Length: 137
Image (tube, rainbow, N blue to C red; front, side, top):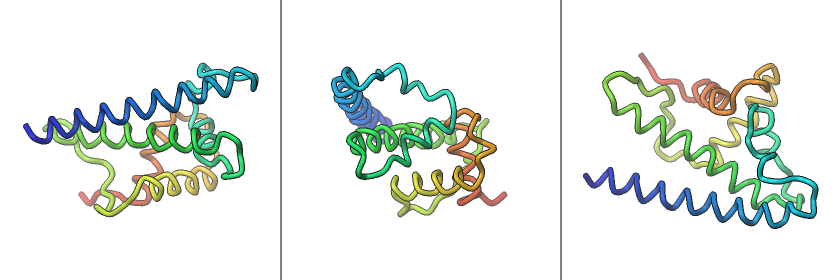
């Protein structure tokens, strides 16, 4: 019961953070020639472009927040379904791993493996994280 409340609380915070980032990005984007529709992320390369944006870029903070939120959602979903009997956990990262470290693993993996750029972003995230922190059988 406590875990359910914690997951709902985390989800609420993440959704609020995502919406704030999206609203900020949309307001800034209105005069930049792009919109939220551009952030649909059909490919892993597009997620990489957002996650690997340079700190000097005008939208660095918003892009990084979006990237972290995307990762957080994917990882939390994996953790939630791994509690079922039908699904086995696929990433076994150490408990002290940060979002930034996970994102950096993704960036490094995708830069070394551009052939996965057309994959779905979530598939590429887990491919990168499984490569770094595989679960033992």
